[in-house]
Amino acid sequence: MSSFIVEGGHRLTGEISPRGAKNEALEVICATLLTSEKVVISNLPRIMDVTNLINLMSEMGVKVRYIDDSTCEFQADDIDIKYIHTPEYRKKAASLRGSVMILGPLVARFGEAVLPKPGGDKIGRRRLDTHFIGLQKLGASFEYISDERLYRISSPGRLKGDYMLLDEASVTGTANIILAAVLAEGVTTIYNAACEPYIQQLCRMLTQMGAKIEGIGSNLLTIHGQERLGGAEHRLLPDMIEVGSFIGMAAMTGSNLLIKNVGVKDLGLMPEMFERIGVHLQIEGDDIRINQEEIYEIENFIDGSTLTIADATWPGLSPDLISIFLVVCTQARGSVLIHQKMFESRLFFVDKLLDMGARVILCDPHRAVVIGAGKFNCLKATDMVSPDIRAGIAMLIAAMGAKGTSKIQNIGQIDRGYENIDQRLNRLGAKIIRIDD
Image 1 (spheres, one colour):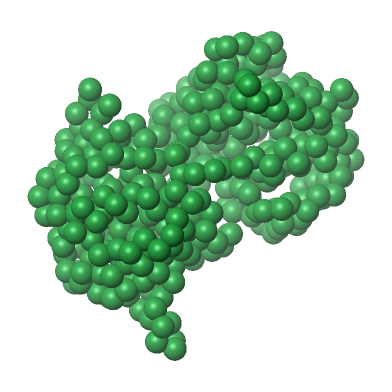
Image 2 (tube, one colour; image 1 turned 180 degrees about the vertical axis):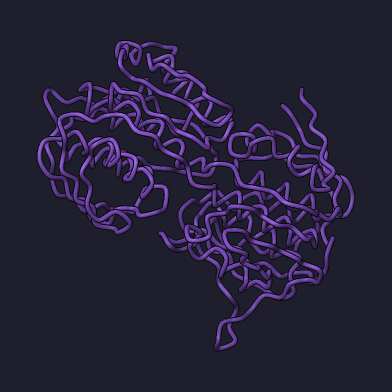
């Protein structure tokens, strides 16, 4: 189990650019299964989750050619559909949460799909009902084989469009239904659809491939199914979660940092929420500068009550940013209630922050009160184990802003979402040593 040794208290200086968005990458890579023609995707991050999905697609028969380090050509013209019934497929798909989004394309184009119960982050229950109910609405049949922890989806003929009201605005659920509906017969209407920038990007790529989608950017999508789709060229957005991570690092370390090419218009409420906890951002075109020379102070609500930071559907704050905000608030001046609505285990890394001297009260699995210390380097170094991607990066931010040297184990979780993060931060002045076991 690889580890980071992090010497805290070092300020960052210079420029850094976010890599392509992980969550978008997983969606659009799965979309390449919808056509036999070539699809080129650029600005791909070289991270474990993306690499593992590409390898899985390759094993399935997709021709994969790297044009450069961040650009890849896919051609799914000779798929071995029997591969999805093999033990090798089950093992690889079970280890990758993003594999769930191959269901829609496989059922739509080949009439069947198999999915072992997927792995990924240990952040509590992550139900797949929205995915399966949506595919059933389109005419697919669904079976869960409990003793094998295996889902089977099939369609005897072409899927048929239908109206559906999603029980939750699930991003991956919406993506899966879109990926199936673009090849379904007739019209599909999806109400309460997720409308995050990554869903918008998926729709734009599918439109370029020949799909007809109305309502892009809204929570009401109308999809006119096509008999076939063609090729496309697509470029990923910058990863907004990386942007938020870098802002948090700059705030915690009192740094002067320029984050380049962030896609400002696609950040939603994130910049405003950082401002509300006292982190001052200077927008320079499509760049963000943070020059945090003084400690930041958390605002109260207008009536004087304690500020609440909560995740919400787009354009609200992404659930993936909540762990970062929690850590950044530990050394702010003031108090805040952090409310993580979606996942009941995502705040459990707080116990390690308590070991570091943070003043945090975990109210229940979804809520924590943070009482900021009001000074830089208020945390003490400790040893930690990363349970998931976002808690892992939050631990790294905490270690960078702490006094002393910390050790973070299981950094493979961080590598799943952040490309060469130690090397990129060390170039800015951080002191991070990677130990590979």
